[in-house]
Length: 198
Image (cartoon, rainbow, N blue to C red; front, top):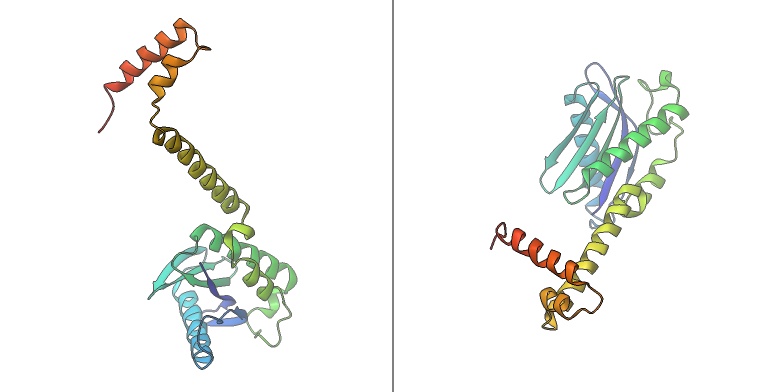
């Protein structure tokens, strides 16, 4: 999972205007980086121009996904990531960047601004922080922890079965279960066996 580009643009009547951008092109060779950066800038501007106000979209371009968010006030952001990067986290990042940008940069500067005149330095920080979506996004982090717990639970049940013990045998051998509990277990097992899919 990788983020390559994060851009803030203003959607004008006919074309978009790049306000600020950040790139992580370390995975490309040194001689390709300037061409890749130009292509990402061009693609970001084109996607914003073709997107409607108040819309969010994800556009696939070769092995990359371009996530765009164009607000009703014409402020827009684009993140270019690989296809494995979680879409929800990408849109969370775009929403956060646009909210922060609109608080720090006056809206009067959006139509005529450019990367040299706009004073907003947080894009590089956000791009670095969101490289690992598990650390940057709390819900993704919790989901990853749940997935790990689920794997551990599956491994535990598999290890019980690997030792040749069946749950039925354990119930029969148990001294702690009363006769009623054992009868309940057998009845429930019979009832559920008709629904078993093999």
